[in-house]
Length: 252
Image 1 (tube, rainbow, N blue to C red):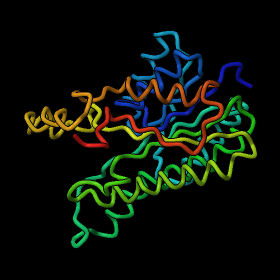
Image 2: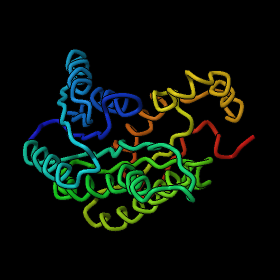
Image 3: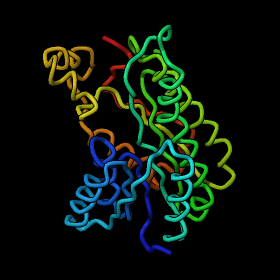
């Protein structure tokens, strides 16, 4: 069994996920970075190791039930436990209005954002039971409440599912002392917004005008909250969703 606490972070080869992995590594965790870009994953993992963090990369697609289960079980057996599972992987998956939405598109977005949480959590539970202050941390979105912008309705629907499964898992796992919470990042300056940032920089910059604190979020703004939720300091917090949006959800 690992003497360190062990954290698995899905979708951790860039953006918020990488910052979360780095922060947990600096908190003393052995961190497992997951992703689908193996070259980037190996490179990012090497960055953490060079910084003195105990890290490894494990490549698999979070929408592939068999791959998720096999790899998480393998990791759990290797380390003897899992202390924290961060279901960071997710995304918009593109935009489509319902009238023209293909079933394939619908299923793809639901798989990326909701199935992935189910597959990874289910596989990790037996090993979380052996963890220290074990917890699962999921990612929802403002879109879970406001149903998303034009063409992002199924993204919003999938994230509403994440909000609900977070509370359902918390109920299910409370008897084992496993806490389950979610973060809901607002507009965070990451490659997620790469396209609009490069094509319409003035639109991207204007988003800060709708945020009470007057700026876009940074990945570190999210990683600090995830670090707290994973820690002993949050040992009496479960079934909660923390908005990390600078007050954006309230509008101004």
